[in-house]
Image (tube, rainbow, N blue to C red; front, top):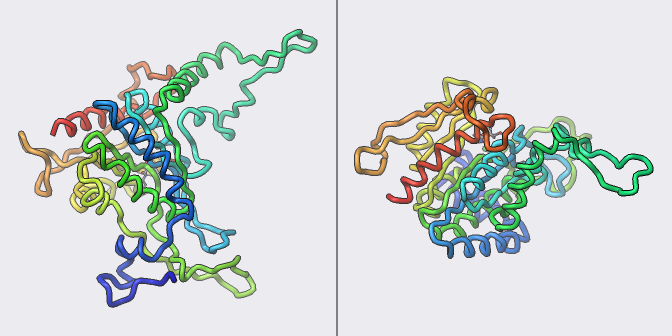
Length: 345
Ligand code: PAZ
């Protein structure tokens, strides 16, 4: 029986669910174990390769169902661009990548040919009428763009360095994330979490969710949602204390961006926050970290360092795909250096 946490526990419903209460009361996705098994095999395989770094990239938005037999749900804007693009740069930097993404959001490599922006079928040309061979062709210009993408995709496939897993609801996401922390533990400092997914802050607990489609005859719909527990805290402090953990902070008010990123670092004690403004996120972000004192790792008393990364810094650099510059190249470049230092720590 699923029930709300009682007021007698460490948190009242208005204070929200603690992480423990959440996992005690909200059921796991039915096929959780089967969904995690490929990740166990993947990590076990790459853990045997000396020095191989493995990263979990989370990407896309999470849904919040309003009905158990879900017809309606809340969603957010994230298309999965940040996560899918970053995954490609991480692969080219030699990481084995577990790409944990919202179902049907953008994926590494295929993102270049998303059906809405650049439909793949539009690149292909039919054989000439009456031609003896039925070869499909692409123009030279399209081939120039396609070739590096295709090469990188085939390389990842052949080497087995990319594992893709999906989630849909915020509940799926939380359960899978906790399992992934367990799986990644064996890697110690070689593991990285790159948490770019836009995870809902609110959810509807199962015991208050309508079982069937909510009927409009009952008048207005009033929703009271609970806060999703901040799993970054146990992720950093209990589940994976050795991994290099990067979270993202999205704001729409510039003035809140850096203070909130700093607050997250102070609260959770992880290694870096990538702070981004909704409207500027594709051309500038700020990497916020605690500043280590000489010869020591950063701690709760350390000052903060802010490193602004701007797309214009790529103007004179040849991009690895030979195409449009992407800010994720800068983000990953910076994080690679920091993960190396973390590894030696
Ligand atoms: O998926 P996308 O590229 O459209 O957006 C990326 C993003 C803004 C969701 C990501 O950079 C981010 O900030 N994620 C964390 C959001 C949050 O504060 O929960």
